[in-house]
Image 1 (cartoon, helix red, strand yellow):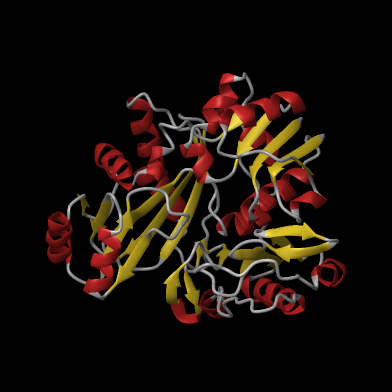
Image 2 (tube, helix red, strand yellow):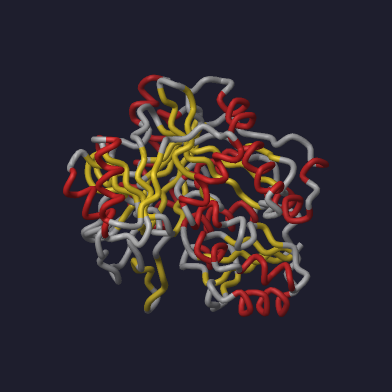
Length: 417
């Protein structure tokens, strides 16, 4: 089949890489893509937020499946426009994507579905903010109600910082702090059937030891040797299936990728947040372990035929991804710096390690940085220790002036495995 992927980050590169290895994919297109995606897919210029333009491009290419990667186009209704053009699309409707587009909507759905989550208040005035902060106390958890590219959440012991973030948002969700390790679990759904993927853990803070500001994610690993073997089954029963059933009951069926960000607390599993698309950087490690060809699974979601699929097949290997970010990220990043070492990684570390591009572009024959998170260096191995060793060996070959990366991705889990 001919496939068109919308987006231009490392998540989309991971998707395109998997699709390029799928024998059923005869032509692979990506819009707008990036310098790395250009190696496996034909790139097209398009405004990813313009549903009519995306649908027109898909029609022109004769695409038989469109995959919408990022959250902003989904919340903008791009999947609806593609489906209206008669083309199968992987990704929820504008209404269903509010599960990520509005924290308050997500809390309302969870209440209706009986899904365990943190107690919370939705606030729009400074007075409501003060009451909520006072009710929960430190550590304060303050979330912008709308999309904020993974950076709308502040968790802090400092009341002034919490208050400032809350009052900078039009509408804010303030909630109780959830203790315990965090887990990301993705599920592919067609609105009825729910197919869970393997869990992963990502690292949100910019610096080693989970210090520094929140980011879009600085690395991830899978599997989770410390997690309860029944975790996926429990989350399916208490979170994923009830949420999909509740959205269908509301006449806003959710098809696509449902991402549950979870806290494994002393009182059990609690939902921190939902996303309406593959997470970045967890997708990089989850897809590295998926052996079932990807295109047929995503098409079954788009066509409502997930129940007919064989069970997914997974590699026994572990996967680790390390994000290489620009100077000054997550604040305004410096861009336009040349990236070196990519050919060396391809020559010396493949197939166990490879580089997925996030914020890159071609400029005068060179690959240069074009965003905050620039590369996701991904590796597999017999266990987390080997995958980690291979990922960091590849990171060491890459040159990007002023770049930063965490040195402790999966270190604790590898030591305990």
